[in-house]
Structures are given as C-alpha cells and as structure tokens.
Length: 468
Image 1 (cartoon, helix red, strand yellow):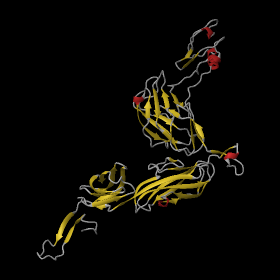
Image 2 (cartoon, rainbow, N blue to C red):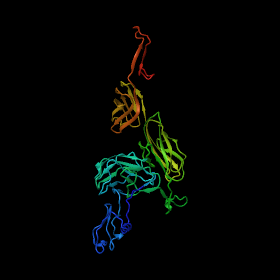
Image 3 (spheres, rainbow, N blue to C red):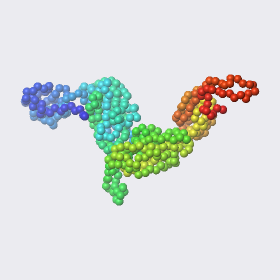
Image 4 (cartoon, rainbow, N blue to C red):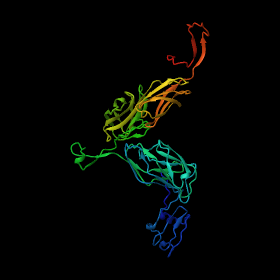
C-alpha cells in the first residue's frame, strides 16, 4: 500500500466556503473582487501542507498552479540515479546509487526506525544478501549504521542511529541485486517510519527482460538472413550456487558459489548441490549434458532433473572426485529447451596428498604435503599445522617436507605461504593427538637378563597399530 497525501480539490474548497463551512485557510486578495491573483505574488495556503499561485481572472486558473495542494506528514523523496535494466539469469549486478532526501520543512526520519528499501512483488529479484558493506554519503552519512536484509532478501534495512534534520540527504551505493527470475518492471519502495506502508516510490524504474534473437529462413534461427525480431518468452534457465547467488552462463569458477571445490584429499570426493531455476510459464526440459576440459574426468553429475516445472527450482548435484594429485578444471555443458542453452558451468578443484594425517602432541614427526602447485620450487616461506609453525626441511614446486612443532591440539588446517602462490589452505586435514598418559606397568619389575613381557596401560599411547 502506498501512502499519498490527499489532494484537495479547489472546487470542493469553494463549495465548502459557499455552504458557510469553516476551514483552516487564508489567502490574500487581489485586484477587483479580491480573487484576481494575476497582479499578486502571494500564494494561497491551506495550513502548512502546500501552496499554489492563483491564475488570471477569478484566480482559480489551474494552469497557473505550481504544485499539488497536499496534507499529511513528512514528505521524503526517493530517487535512484538512473533507470536500470537486467536480463533473466544475469549475475549479481550493482545498484544505481539511491538518494533519500528528508522533508525540508518537517523531517521524518528518526532514530529507532530503520530505513526500509523494498523491491516490489512485480520484480522477481532480490538484494544480494552477501554484501553487507554499503557506501553511504550525503549530509546524513553519520546518522546511519549497519545494514541487513529481510522479507526473503526483498527488503534492505538501513539502521538509523540519529535523527535527521530538515533537508538531510543520504546516498546508498555499492550494493547489488541478484536472482533475476522472470520478466517484470517496477519501482523501489521506501518506508522510513516502520509502519509497513510505502512512504515514497523511486522515481526511476527497474526492468527485467527475457532473451531474444533474430529469426531467419528455414528453422527461424538464421540471424544473417532475416530482419524479423522474434521473442522467445520468459523460459530461461539459470543456476543458483551453493550460496544462492546466480552462477551466470560461462562464469569463472567461484569458491563462494561452489563451482570451485577448493582443496580436497586425493582419496576423497566432495559434492556440491546447486539449483536449476525455470522462471518461465512452461516446463523446461534438460535434453542432456557433457563435461569437457583437461580435468573433466574428475567431475561427475550426481543428480540432474530431467525437467523443471514452471516457476520452480530443482537440485543439481556435482561431485569432484579427483583422478590424481593437482589442479582439475572442466566445463559442464547443460543442453535444455530454454533460451539459455547450452548452459556452461566452469568447474575447478585441486587434490592434495599427505604422508600422514595425524601425529603426536609433542610433534617432531615428518610430514610431506603434495599438491599441484605450492610454490616456485624454493619460495615456500612458512608452514603452519593446526596453528603451530612447522620447520621446512625441503621443498619443490608441488611439495614440501616439514617437521611438525609441539603443542598442537585436535583437528586443524595446514596453511602454506609462498612468494609465487600466496596462501594455500588445506582445511581440517591434520590431527594433533592428545599427549599420552601411562596409568600402569605390569609387572613392575623383572630380571636383569630381560625377556619379560610387560603390559603398559594408559590412554593416547598410539592409534592401535603405530607404536614403534
């Protein structure tokens, strides 16, 4: 619902006056009968809500009005810098800078009520909830704080920390929209007093379009032979990453979206679950898929829906099961009957190997870490295991041998620093075992000649097979 200050018709006002009704207003007379405002510079006022200047003759010439005559509370204006257009399936896209200006006479934005900027239901997109670092500007820059999202990420919340004064301005930028699901158009909506009603509407629009192509002779897809424009409707495949963000067709691998699987033990596999969306009004069919690239054999589809119903989402599961140590890259190409076919997902993963994945609390044991690229052959400068610095013994471009330090505890990461590769992290892959405790030795004594079997009882003495 949109709040609108009522527009008071002049005809109704005149009728009230003729009927002898009282109303809160004043005016200054002009020449003749006092209604000729053509020679006056004074306006006609109704309370403090608005004003207009009279016209010629009887002073009621609508052509001379300079603004609507309105009643109500604070008038806050809301404007984006430009109109914005997006296409279904687009990646997260930066917003046009928003400017909010408080009432120049009676400010309405105050501490205790967040500024809410909402995407209307006609626009099937969301704010990018992963971005919590808005850039603020304007005279009210010091009167706002943290941001957040609500209403299934359809609404941005800006925390107000101090009352605005008359005419204060606030600009908001460096945020993004994402999840462009279907065509539509609309305007952002502002609620500054927390009553759940729209106080102002953006004077710029946002539009989501579908994809189109030029039809030609024969099957209608010969772009070189035609001048006819053909629109293929709303059905456009999109894939959402593990974080809910759109993975654009052909986008580079992303750890945040799950298309970069990171570092995985060579003997293990990692599976990430994505979502295929169909924003159109008809069923989308998956005709097939292929995996290509030098490391294509390390990636396999675990689950692929044969169809995706209109305006729904179905899961796509991809496993990274490395064929060997080192970097693997590949592209999963999904053939479908939407306008976005084939849909390419670029995939990446790196497999590593450890000579052992556990050791004593006291350290001193040797560990060899092998991966596709750890350094330049001699530029690994530091290695930590579970937060404890390990001594580098030897290294190559894709391996390093270290002696572990003492004092680590439990499961942790291995972090390798090199000049050429930067920081490489192997998460949760090594365990420092607790210090051993001997509770009893039985028997407690034996002959000097030896040969006596001794049982040592305690905890954390070995893993059951590695006592040396």
